[in-house]
Length: 393
Image (cartoon, rainbow, N blue to C red; front, side, top):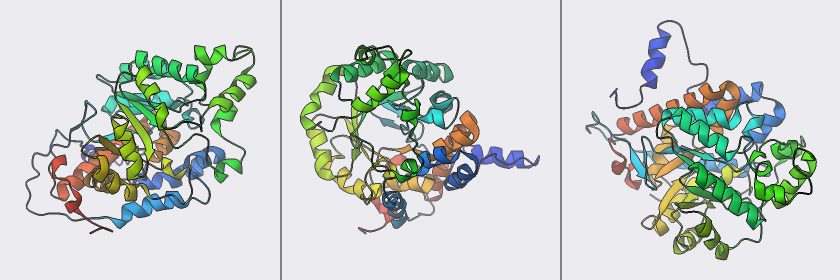
């Protein structure tokens, strides 16, 4: 394989000569089963579970399966290049780590282990509002772990405008380059896996580090968090999301953020058009991994209409069931500029910490690059809907 590309496959085969095999499955869809048997049931349920009966999770997978790749032969793929630019940032491969909260419940090092793995491989990490380590601590870990590390900040917009402004200011000062506003979670969806065990990380004081360290948040408390952590956690839950937000509130973000702004949770072309009209820089086509609305449209089914509506006006990213290189291929062929990776890296974090996250990123990159080459696509620009057959073909 071209040495400019990922050579994880070669490393695995070379190690096999000495009897060594990978610690984690190279079929990333199998990480869920491994995590089921090794993680605490409430933690596994928190990662794996979705809204209601899990129909939207199943639909994300089904939507990906409905599209099929059409390989082309006798295409020169001897010098491929899969680097691209997203919102002014150069990506060696078009993938990012999705924001996932409460990772301190999954592994003791939580977000810091993820940061080290992402930065060491040059994969941008989208850091959640709901982390145990603070915005600043994660930024420092990212900066230490990789030259030119790229990191984005995801905001759950709280009811308190003072707290929202403070979180944005802190993230900007810490060097986060892109703001990702999650729209689909003004409150938590009905999640039976968590409800049946009475477990969600924030209620246990996990993933609340940014709020409990925030001066604007602390100013709203009668006592410092250290003196009354229960009251602080309760107030954090009270202001977590703001269901009163509308499109008219978006200018607030521009007043408090200088860089690109991306809206996550878009599933309709009409909403994508409103985002473009509002001057946003991008959208993430996503149903929150099926965790918010049961029975929602599969994310990949929502992607083509959104790309058709705004793909020439703003950056369209995709999040929804990516488990392998073929899934990446399909989303990119349908117009996404990059994809977000969620549950696989979280399972791997719980199974093997930082090394597990690195394994997922390396395996996914190598799988994607091989899929591209074997399908006769030496560059990202060679991808288009013509590379697939599917529901609309």
